[in-house]
Length: 156
Image (cartoon, rainbow, N blue to C red):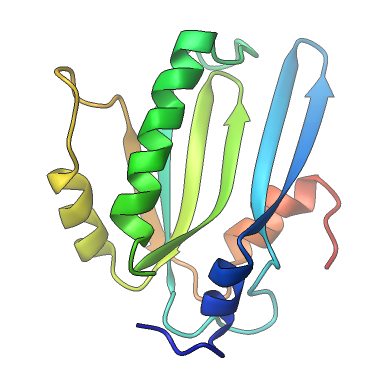
């Protein structure tokens, strides 16, 4: 368990998020991110790995947003995902992106292997969730800052 003065624990306890909607031409991008934003110039202790889970729901480059049915399925998945990975602060969600035919959940975690075990043990419907998983080392949470928040002009 994290101490109460650990920055991630303070972020979890605050449990605030911001929402940005971007649009260009035929597509829209929806970004929800947890605040306060951590990382940047310094490492976030104990959370050096980025985990991204992608659920494609339409053709890439289609600009499509999810149908109400798809949105419902992904919302139920998200609730289960957040509980599975974050109930003990093992992983913390930092952003959820809906863009161009896919939704992506971005987490930072202590241990990618344990996250994989938890995802494998997560209850599934009859058909497995149509997800793709990507992980890498990112102790300064630069992916969040540069690849996600850099596009929306976020400056904390």
